Image (cartoon, rainbow over all chains, first blue to last red; front, top):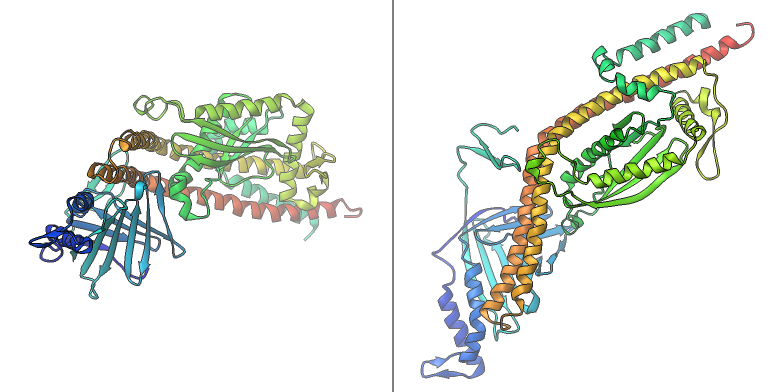
Length: 190
Length: 369
């Protein structure tokens, strides 16, 4: 794998986009492109705004997570997100293996050391997450873009996460089927 | 040293070796099986090697094919026992043994491959071959798990996929019913001589011939009181004792695994329901929303999200299953490997001792010796 993202990451609220600002900027850009506007300057038309808003709401919803837990093996990168499904990047012999179902398709790829995860949904909706770390690997940047042929423009936000070490609990726990979660103060032996 | 003295020494070594391979407790425990195994009746002994788990070579297909490799490996060890129980209950067969590796000399061998197993549905390929190489059946048996709730089952209950095992038993019995006693006797004789020719090829390889269709034909039989054959039978019976010890160990571990496996299956069945629910959710509302609207976009995203949640929860439970049974399976594998090594080592020694004995006996029968 070209880069190692494994570890626990907490959102750095001192950096990153303000979603309302991004929405304003996108509306400005749309107005500028279409020549629509008012006394305050270019502004997207009501129709364009009503088509852009669903994407903005989706991006706001799916980027709420404040903690990411990333595990990485030779074949897989799993990005666990609070309140959402885990993103899965599977590679076999260096080739990305898509996760497909009737509800959508998920595929990953590398652009240098940047990991790109693409989710494609039926009816043209697409969500792209781009991950890259700072040189010292203490910071993770995540760029999320939602696009659809029903919207005049894609909607993109950038957030930053800082690496943190999970504090080891007093108990060692493992999941089992019939006994659910089993914990012990010493080494676990079933 | 004269041939006669050397003969006595080799026989003594051989008998001592045979005697040390089974403890009195083991002998008593396996007596019932042994009677069936050595009887001259028309009941054929059945050997079931651990099934082929049917895990694809390409790991990238596991997710799509719903293959959980560790669980498949456990199923491949458990299912032969369930089939074994059904065969024993039918009271149509001699000793029915589960072994770690195929045995070419088995009177009747059932080779199984798990083609598909998702907890709710099982496709099991069974190839039944007798000692002559005649194929009794080679087909895929399919069926759905019985619906009995897990809380009614405990550790006993009706095994999952009982209908499949029952069908296999019925089909095997039907093939057996079409055979006359002479054919069965020929299978038994061929089995013993195949075993004998593996142990002492010089003495026994001339009794069998391979036919054009690949099966084996019994050319002649050694005399009933042939001392070499009597020794071979003693060794085979001892090996059966060891196999039965392995088998008993397997059964013990199998009982440990059964309950956890049932919990896994119960979850798997729930997942099938969840998957059906996800499809219903996606289909029911998809047409209700205006394309590009917030409701339509959220519905698309949520449909995928629930589908992924279901798949990821399943992965998590597969790990939980492995956490729970891992130690038992590991202990079983170590114990069985030890016993297997013991049998293998013993076979090598028997082999060379018998060969030596055969040469001495042949020399003793030469005129003037």
